[in-house]
Image (cartoon, rainbow, N blue to C red):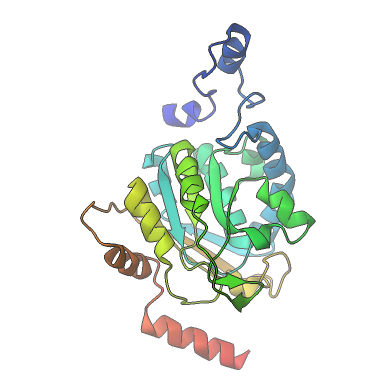
Length: 282
C-alpha cells in the first residue's frame, strides 16, 4: 500500500532555484517535470489519458485480455527495468503494456479498471522504428507518449536493406533505463519467430538492467498489422510476464541472444508449426 502511494509523489527536486525547487515538491501532476529528452511528462500523461479510453475498449471490452504474472510488477524498481517481448502488431502490443503499467501504478496487477488513466505512469518508454513512428498523425502522437526512435539498419519500408548502424540508439535506451521502464521487441519486426537482433544483447550487457521477459499472444488474430483496426473481435489476448532474470558480465552476446530467444518463446518448434498451419488456412 505504501509503495503504491509513493508512486503518486512528485520526483525529488533537481533544481537549485528556490521557486522551481518548491514547485517540484508539490508537483503531483508533473507540470514541471521533463523526461531525459526535455519532453513534458504532463503532456505525455495527457496523451495517454486521451488515447487510453478508446484503446481500453479495444483490448479489454471488444476483446478479452488475460494478464498472467502481473504481481511480479509490484517488486520491480522504478528504473533500469527492460521488458523484452515478442512482437505481433505495430501499436496494439505496446499500448497494452502501457495500460498494464499504468494500472500497476495504482496497485492493480490482474485486471484493468480504466480510472488509472486519470494519473497514468509517465516513466515508461518503448523502442520503435523511426520510419514507423513518422508515418502519419497517429503514430506521431503515439511517439510523444514515450517512443525511443531507432533507425533499423536491416529493414526499411518492409524491405531488407543494409545501412550504417544507428549508434545513438543505445545511448537513448540507456537514458530511458536510467529514468524508468523500457519495453523493447528484440526481433525488431512483427514477423513471427524472426531471429533476435544483437542490439538487445548489447543493451543488456552495457546497462545490466532487470530483464523481464514477456510473451504475448492473440494480438495478431485480433488486429491488423498496425494494431489500429480489428480483424476479429472477442479474441483472447494474453500477456504473460515471467520472473525477472539477471545476466552476468562474463556472458557473451551470442549467449544472451540465445537466452532471449528462449525466454520469449521464439524458437519452440510446435509453436512455429502451429503458426504456419494457421497461416496456411487463413
